[in-house]
Amino acid sequence: MAPLHFFLILFAHSIRQANGNHENCPSSFTCGNFGTFQYPFTMAEHPECGLLPIQGCLLNATSPKLIQLGNNSKSVNLTAVVETNKIITIYDDGFHTSLDHNECDTLHNNYTLPPPSPSLSMYIKYNVTLFKCNHNLSTKPPSNYVNLGCRVPYGYEIYYDRNNTHPDQEAAGVFSGCSVVQFASKDSTNTKDVLSFVSAEMTLEIVLSHDCDDCFNHRGGLCGVDNNNHFYCHKGSSGTNRLVKKMGLALALVIVRVLIQRL
Image (tube, rainbow, N blue to C red; front, side, top):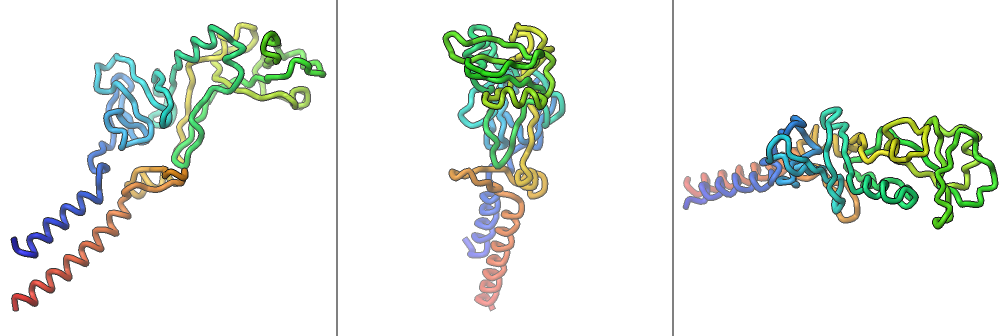
């Protein structure tokens, strides 16, 4: 094979390698009755193409769809898309079962979402604030706060505002020594029936970091995080262009050498 011909083949192969799997990632995909998704969502069959894989998109339209919110996190039911690629609702049946079985144990800590990463963050849009206090709280809570109980056998009590308003100065002072926990809320808190307002269905807002937004939307790359939790832009267009320029320069040099040898 002629040297020039061989190098042209090598050059084309290198460019394909530079683009990697990103070339094969669709700009969007359809997932059942939820419509069209784009990055950071991806089908579970192509986890390399996004940050939030959805399972079941290739099944029939009405079949359940599960979404994984983070690496090594459990999958939960995707129930609605409120705003494309920004706001979704999920339902955690395991959380609901736990809450139905034992309120005090379930409300011990915040509902666990993956922590913010250098690529994206997610937030529960509608929530209720509860205070977990030692049973010997010395100050009487404001009259609008409900005591859920839990003193026996847990040794703490849980309070929440029956009007679900932002804690005022009085409440902030009373509960200053208590732990603050938050959960998704679906209705009025004017009841002692926690299941009527603490919800296993949650509205989540998905927010790309500035670096990730720049990487994907402006540089044509995919967002990544290394082992030290540092952000990097994976195989972005700028990186590919730099490689193309280097390879192009090398190709030009080879062509010159071949022409000289033939003269």
